[in-house]
Amino acid sequence: MDGERGRARIAGSERAPLAGASRVGPVDERELIDVTVRLRPAAAGKARQVYAGAKRKTARRPLTREALGALVGSSAADARKVERYAHEAGLSVVEVSLPRRTIVLRGTAAAMQRAFGVSLETVRVGPRTFRHRTGDVTVPDDLAAIVTGVFGLDDRPQAKPHFRRRAIDGAAAAHEAPAPTAYPPTQVARAYDFPAKATGQGQCVAIVELGGGFKAAEITTYLQGLGLGPADVVAVSVDGAHNAPTGNPDSADGEVVLDIEVVAAVAPKAAIAVYFAPNTDRGFLDAVTTAVHDTHRNPTVISVSWGGPEPSWTAQATTAFDEALQEAAAAGIPVCVAAGDDGATDGVSDGQKHVDFPASSPHALACGGTRLVLSGSTVTETVWNDLPNGGATGGGFSAVFPAPSWQLPVLKASGQKNRGVPDVSGNADPQTGYKILVDGSWGAIGGTSAVAPLWAGLIALCNQATGRRPADLAQRLYAAAPDGFRDITQGNNGGFSAGAGWDACTGLGVPVGSGLVAGVWSAAKKKRKGKR
Image (cartoon, rainbow, N blue to C red; front, side, top):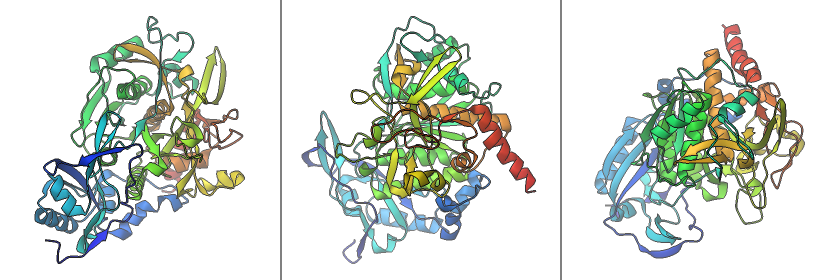
């Protein structure tokens, strides 16, 4: 079939060996594999209107999802070319989404290896085995300009949840804070002056999860302890994953339930859509693009508490994710992403500083962590750092992305020109964490995983309170700072120190909700009216 056709490598598709993996042998050639093929935009000029976001100096109006799809979607003609090749290669077409620019193909391992010029093997890490590839993915020359990425040939774990849990005595009610410290999310929201009368009504918060699950009855019990009604939560399956609680509160269940209970507590009338996907680069990307382009549930903000060090990602993946996050920003759908829990190294043992991705995308709202201590009316807050025996907020400078134009002014003092992480912060220290009920156990859960859903809930409240959903929210936050923030100036994350203004530990600072409503949401609304 391909003997008469040349082949071309897909730029950025090179995959490095999985660290610590031992080879088991070749994959079973009969194994069925699903892959997601990502296509180019149909109209490159129109797509550039969206993908020029990092260089844009002024924020724009939000696009509808339909308008967004028209700008960035792939063409039916390109999709048909890929479908014809799939037929030639013995692969089946499972799904086509032109707005998401994706085609899902299914076939045997033998067919996939021939179709994409790869060798697949099985490797073992600890008790688990994974499908593994190294090197580049290739396609026939006539598809080289059309296909921008192929995801799913390799199913190694791509990300980890950024939460830290400590068990606590569950005898106290959910609205009480037992010793040493564990705050209900509503108390943290009051400390950050979240809009008091807003409930999140009319908003939908999307949460991306790559494992674990929740029990609806347990979420209801938790909220009843806070004097709240049941949450409007729906589990959405992506790439065959589903809500699958393990029964272990220290598993991914802790992440899933933390995210849901924080959002449901601070924005009790918001709908919550939990997108469950496999923990692979394919699953993660498909979950994000599904949420961004979901015209049924229409999420207005997305929370992501998973990630991995920048060096662990392929270039095709970072490009595809960054494009998806730009699409979200253009549609007025902020994506709040945990900045990581392993300090300035992001857990990499090469002696260098690293940041976590996708938080390091210029189009994510990267969420760092603090230690919040509330004593009556006194608020004490520093950088979260429990190193060397615990965690610490991620933060630093990207090795992949230059700084967006709106961040450059705050980086002058550092002499840096690459993307700085985080943008914003909030309570994350598990020693001053959030009191959460998961798998029948009470725990104080922290980590920057807690900050992403906290900010997502805040954004839902601000959207509802003003009737406004600003596009390019991160850009607007930088333009409005320091209004709407309380600066955190004490502490470090093992590589960078906090100080006046933006820093690589807590970003612009922790939120002051009333200031954000006035300085960002309402100001954006007034500016728009003034232009008419």
